[in-house]
Length: 364
Image (cartoon, rainbow, N blue to C red; front, side, top):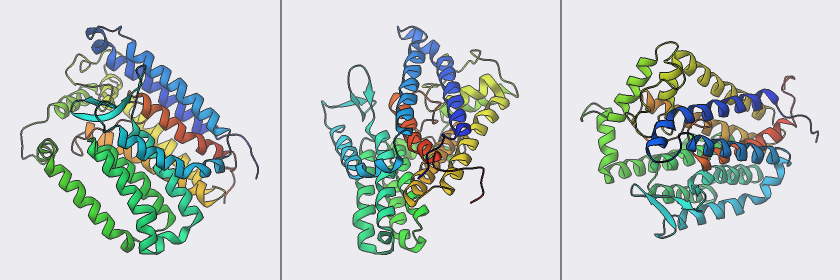
């Protein structure tokens, strides 16, 4: 199998997006970092370090033959489940705002649910490329696919992090879709999943409140109000870098789930189009790589990662613009977050290696 150069347009777009993210995290967090006793650039430096680590990891992984990763699909799944279990144990998992989602390593924290996203896609892509008949038989499908996905998503939802569980499920279901599973075969499991999500919403009153507010049956959502205010005041060209007002604690955690609102406020419609254009280009380019992938594994892996990326982008921006109910999902390569950033870059590593094996200039 040939090994050429990585797809440079794909890589350049990724780096531009990550660069924008570092700048926007600095802008969004400089005031909150200052009043919390840290230097104004504290979170900016952390984000920059994680981007650098992520790029190094991606670079290393892009040089490893993508087929090598298939050897570790069971190990990755096992480690993922193990980490999702121990993070729930008091004294081991770090509890923040009534949620245990992080492992504290003193110098930094680690979020197992982020690792589960790539572990799930790798596991499904490998097993379905080796045994495509699995999706045609009810029993093998259940034990080899539905059960592992159910365990991972359930453990993540218990943290609680329903949005992360949905992202994990989207990535793994994406593999099933691209592998060619029939809708009628998957329909019962889809129904069960929707019932589980509904039950979790009812079980936690704050989730139900958010949904009722979205439907206009409750009060108002402060975060959404401030987010829409930021987007509206940004206008066409924005207020300018650093001149946004929401960073002055009007919109909590601006550097995370609502960073798109900060982009809109400071760079306006033009800035939003630039970011959306970069995402669209990366996803389009990723699917082009998938279409010309050398084998089934590379096709399933690349397509599903791109689908997951698109899902996270749509959910994050959908929340910021009040199109969907509020849920905590970061904007890939933009929002602050160490584990998320490194894992995202790591997921791109095999795709860049796959791009070495294809020529996008030729028609397939």
